[in-house]
Amino acid sequence: MNESLPVPKMEFDPVVFEGATGMFNDDEKWKYLRCLIHYWYHSHVEGLPNDDEGLFQLCECKPERWMRLKGMIFDNDKFFHLENGKWHQKRARLNYLKKQADLIKKQDQTEPAREAHLTKAATDFEGWLKELESSPAYTGINVRSEFEKARLWIGLPQNKGRILSHRFFLNWLNKIDTPIGQAIARVKAAGVPSLAEVQAYARDKWGEHEKCGVWAISFHSYWNDPARNWKRKNGNQIDWKVDLTAQVAKWRT
Image (cartoon, rainbow, N blue to C red):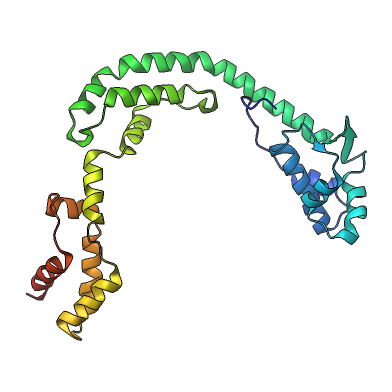
């Protein structure tokens, strides 16, 4: 199987399937469908090996029912037939190859336009890339280098059909772990208490005050908000117990 070729989606027509499997019970129909799915998505219609043990495992059949089930599914006629040492389903193979040919044709038709778009994007994005480079949001990121990475990634054969748009590249940039993001993570990771720890400390400090539980939950949510944590602390590590005391003092007034 050429892995660069597209794999079409398998379509399921319940009317055709029911008509073909009228003499199968529900369990036998499901086992036959398992074989079709494996034949389509795993073997890519290159055939199921004529391996009795492997086919038995594929069907997940009880040993006492295997010979009957094998004779129904691998009947060498209407369902799976043996060809050059492998089992094939004629209808599925024809559908697969036709759909694959249609996908390849569509890719060949759109590829020139796609290549032109990628080339044009490098020029059209010039002014916008300058804006991104000067934006504080992307401080510490080599925007040009990331744009080239995105352009090369889009150009890979398996990514045919994707477009290097402004939205795509912004999503690309926003997934990068920036120095600011790393700093936020360090602040958040420094002495982050669990809810149980906050509740226990609140009970020890304020006894059985009726609002202890509310204070603990509110503070835990507040402390674990990376954006608020970063803005308020500005990168400085603060003991959460000290901060909890300060927050409760505000809430009690």
